[in-house]
Length: 402
Image (cartoon, rainbow, N blue to C red; front, side, top):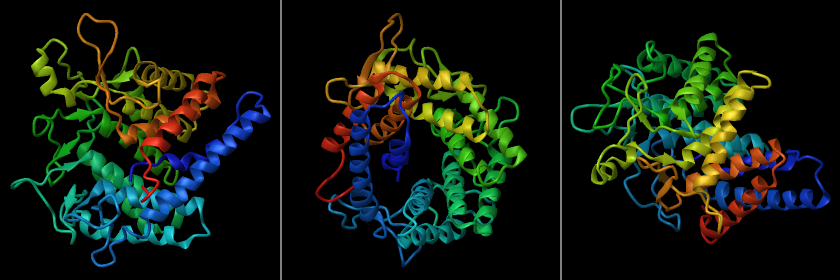
């Protein structure tokens, strides 16, 4: 599961606005109650324990809209780890419900025994329902992105259970990734690795070797792990990723470059024909959802590092949030568009994908609330209200849940 919007409920309940009025407090509490109800009845109680695979271990993945199993039930490292993270966090929120801790603990043996490569280390990207590796041809490719989410989930599980075996698996995972994927010359991490961990420095399958998506989720994973394992090398890498994303990958006027060469030269098709640009859309556009997500990930990393009054990070986070909202937010009904593009010789951004992916709406809601508490600007909270209504009206399945 993607990091759900509903886990921000504590922020809503306890966030402070400048001199809040009784009306604003009541409004925030009303939304808090709506979100908590949705969290419990339309998300957590629908997913758990339904997805627990009691036969093969781990979690099942394929369901139709009525929550009936449908499909091969392949298991991806990202999904397996996110289920561990989500259920572990749910157990923290609702300790009276023993189901969530049981669900979180259940995912660990499958991650350790089936998804971790027992011969070379590192996590397989995809296995079948029984835990047998699925590969493309004769090559087994591992990713920094997938390994990052394993670290993320394990760190959350250890925080909940204080099970030393879980922590040791998380440490081993970080050390394997750092040994093989980290780039000591240009910094950051190569996204693709061979099965034995050898970094594929030229990229793979027509995809450049470094990218913002794996980078921001490495930042997120290291932030989570550092809170339970304050290791010096880990701190150094967390600081490195914070600085790299904030000062290199984010470019004016406040958005992430998507893909880069090994020296962090951005991949761009602005000088290419429309046909070439469209063919390579995935590699070069403005992703409003990733931008608004990264805004709060940068702040979380800075906070975990104990950097007080980090104005540089806060300024960049606000810049990213404001750019995404000003250029990509649908003021009429709410929702963040999928993609924009700064075409050559044009100052204004063009919306090239006006669809609205569900995960981007979740990230938007979170950042809007944080910004409304940090800055005396009512537009943040008014957009937050509009965004929550958009999610309620369009994205939540109020009949079947999810």
